[in-house]
Picture 1 (cartoon, helix red, strand yellow):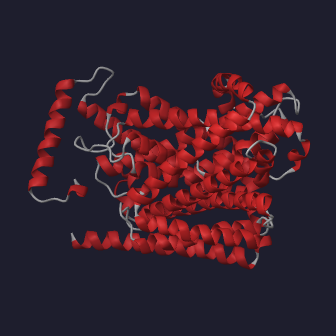
Picture 2: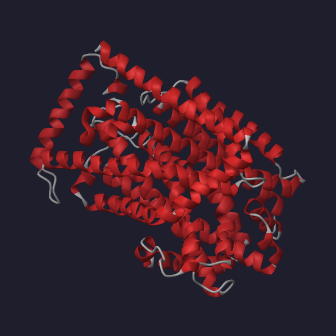
Picture 3: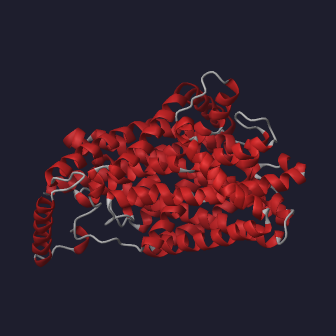
Length: 537
């Protein structure tokens, strides 16, 4: 037992040390020579997009359809935890935490800028036409819909099942035990956990960089604060202090409360834009956009546009970037939503994850997208604004412009804090042997590292830093995508064996299932009477 404990501790410290060294080197190199750093990252990103774009389309499609398959499979009846485990959070808080961690800053940053971009430069339609309006809304919904949540779900399911049902630690490497065996406790496991940390740091840093530019853009539009790296550095510093304070307060307090606040603020902003914008056009566009999204879902999911250069270029700039961003975010979001989903069944988890956020996304981007396009069409100079200031320029043409802009800045800041807070928790878990309660010191180290990487990416990309942010996401996603493939295979292998053991079919063997539940309940009572801590049961 002592040797095992020492081995676990050594592995945990190695993951922490190696990960900090890698991130630290990136920060130093990027800070010393940001131009070269950005140029190299851009070159690697272009190479990955050109040669692995088809791969990103296939892997993301596989994750979505894998999750859909589980809804109808007997595996869906399995609980992410022991039979006595009940959900830790209410359904409302659970759903708000999922959405806040899974989307966050991006839904505000791209709310109007992406539909407008597709409107003036669509994939297939003629620019600035009625057809382009519908295509722009549909494309935006497609990028923010079920595909992102399918990626998160594939990671989260494997981890939650392994951790809460099989009793493993909360490390992603442990999810591979069914196919790799004891190798997950050695160098291979360390490599997987380091890849997890790297993908998480880059994915979240991209989001924080995006949030920083929009806060800067809003302050510039409202108060004349210059859009500069100095201003963005100050913004990152202030918000870092705020999210570290939240991280110090713990998961059940900081992230839970902030997530609920985020949804309230987002709902208020959404309702205001719906009422003050072209309300009837928005309401008529909602079912049309949703229907178009569903009708073209499979075709767009697998379309690499090999014979259409215009659409192929568009895919490289938009879809491939998004799939890579979601892939690089998947360890962070997957680990976090696994942590807050104990006690849910596989079917309940997948259905909530695919349906609820996608529905919110359809409503959100239709409201903001239609409003943005309509306002910008009446004030064409808005088309020339950068994405970080476009939303505020649109608000400036609407009633209650100042309150709307201030609310948007507060919402972006709150999402910034929530995402960073969640990420420090996840990184703390992955470098503390999967502990559900990583130390405050570890979370602070990762909080500072996240902010540093975000600023380095902004330095490397000039004043907006968006190209460097996109490049980082595309590069980080590639190595981790292979880990996700192994995780899906491993989860299905283990869960299917348990499904067979329990006799679960479309019509399950209730007698055998009850025997299993009685056995689990007996073991639970015996352990509890023996004084085993509740958190370990």
